[in-house]
Image 1: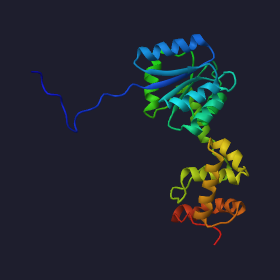
Image 2: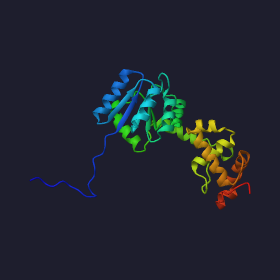
Image 3: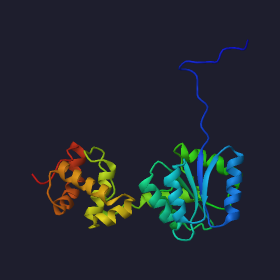
Length: 242
């Protein structure tokens, strides 16, 4: 007789293979990526030849990751990434492009992508890159990482975008508050942060409750007080319209 099967809490279940959706208007590019992923044991749930179909497939299959081109018919990769991120935030996105344009790369990351790489990358490396993205890593070049560091150093005037160390507001609420102070409408804030308008309105409602204010004007007035040295030192982050 053979040995009994192992059981108990120490037994580890085999890891499930990653599931991916591929989107590119070039059928040869789709085949090359698909073959590389399948050879590494990644399941390719579907592939799309335009951005609109990529969104539909991502929302239907809910894969671990979508590998997507930037320039596609019907819906470009940036817009498709934004829609996927809004409706299926758990799905990771890697954008592949023929362009090394840093501004396009920034747009892609802001839209919700976890990585932006040139199509010149060795396709054999893709499975490892995707595994890293799914586990929470980013996929960008060292050169572009330096660009991101420079962007982070450009803090807007009057401390906008900087959250006090002690704060009753979440990081997301600070982002919404700063955009309100910049006179953005709920629709504009939703587009900037890749959120639904309903979510933005919910954050604004929470801000009014936490800061005990009743209007957008009072919210804007609260920003300066919340970032004052006294507020940073005593951690009060309390508000404004009492």
